[in-house]
Length: 356
Ligand SMILES: *Cc1c(COP(=O)(O)O)cnc(C)c1O
Image (tube, rainbow, N blue to C red; front, side, top):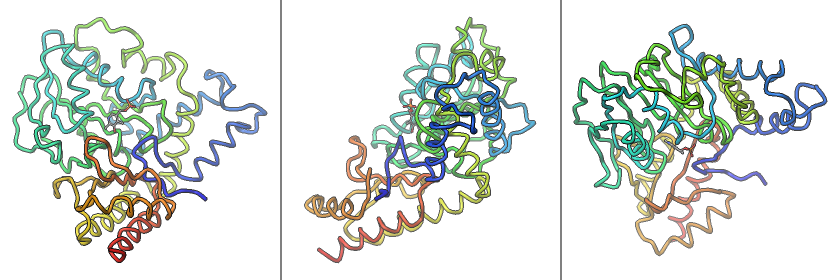
């Protein structure tokens, strides 16, 4: 039986996408060849890469606005390095908002490239909220933030108005909600949360921001070099890019970000409602900063753990355990998660309440 998969990442993808991707592994485009054995320079794969890059921009509303989309390897963690390499000027400085483990990872890497100012941090409160009162130095080269904190279940509901290039790690909420994406100078997202299999990262960058640091950038780390080679500087992760394209097509057919956002709001709504209503549970994130993608919660009484765990496992739920730094439970309810699966979880929570 197919499980209700609440895993934080790698995570659920639409069932149709799994089927189509599996078929392409056996026979891609009726070519008699697997997607895994064709050249990345073949006409068929070049078309995949072009469509994936174009559709990503289209869904974000960024066509014709000076942006380029890339699908690169190395995971979101690689962008923690590539971003300062490409945007932090020699002798310049960068500003970062510290909202979680991943944000802290990005800050650590930036420090190797120049002065890195942490404008605010919620670390002392185990990242239960998004800091809001902070000043961004006007002379920084860019401001970096993390839109959704996958581990802690918080999500930025608004972004600071700043004249600086806004750089955002959207790994766990890309394509999940409508934003004015043209406010961002650079967006990156590891595929394996809300877009595709692990192995590729989407980078969307405003081209005019590049080439200004005065640094000699090794080709593999240079966004401009990847743009020039149309995201084929070296062999791309062909299967991850192809499967991401299938997910983007699925999203477009569903009505794009506007439609999926409605479904995401409904899913998160019923789950938070149950967490707040059910006396056995409590949420871990500050209410106004709650994430619509990763819902983190605890049992008020640890002695119910065994019973709750056996109930949700028996209901076919998988991947519900919280990250070790928060404990408890984390329900990741990405785009591909059906409302039905969230209802199963809510029913299990209500069942526990009846049993006790
Ligand atoms: C998972 C995650 C990362 C790390 O992604 P990798 O692809 O493993 O490097 C970075 N940022 C956020 C917000 C994440 O959720």
